Length: 167
Image 1 (cartoon, rainbow, N blue to C red):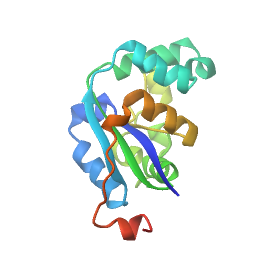
Image 2: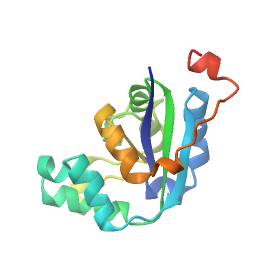
Image 3: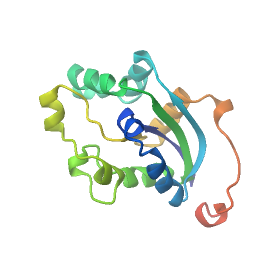
């Protein structure tokens, strides 16, 4: 089943200049970019993303939520919508565990980050873990709508689509 997922390259990946390397991994897996932009969202946008949709504050408390928002506001991010067969699960597998320390080698977080929850707590900061990826279909639909208007999502065919999308 073809589906769409939001992926956000966080400020740490933008500032490190590793966007191209990571984006290539998604494309090589057969995922198609259907929307992309560089933005510097306001705090209210991150509240909508992390609490209204993701319930981070409700689940983890004010300190973790506030630290995550503060970390996200350290610079611009690149938001994109990727599309493919079971894209959400594929992307989550490629990205790896939320805590970079526990992300397996070969995953994006396992290869490009090493920060731990303990370090973040000790420094009173969020965890710089390279990318955000939608967790499930409901979240993906809500996140894509928050970050992109319908007129920003492109519909086109890629040459390898018959091999990666089954049509």
